[in-house]
Image (cartoon, rainbow, N blue to C red):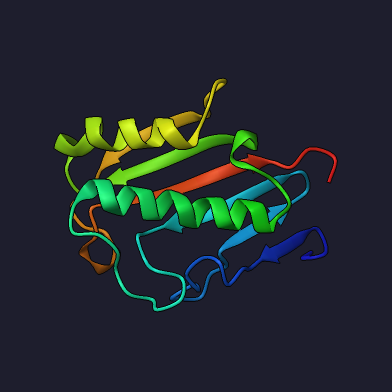
Length: 131
């Protein structure tokens, strides 16, 4: 039954580039698809280094969360996919400027390749509470 499942879409984040939604609300949870560093308007990659890419990824993630009527403070879990675990400290530093305590639970994994050969991708689960 799809009656309890609602797609979330915003032009403030990159459009889905396949058969998936930017996010799906199911009950009191929002599942945000993995975001990569694409400019929402042009669809072009943003940033040559992992720092610039991480900032754009988190801006895209925030835009989708806000489109669902929530904020990053309501994110309960993230997964970070890195092309290189050598970038962990750099990504972690920027990540810490977007989130505040109590921080979301998190997993970080190194992967062999990401869409468009980017350096970082982040997905999230958000507690929408009684919305």
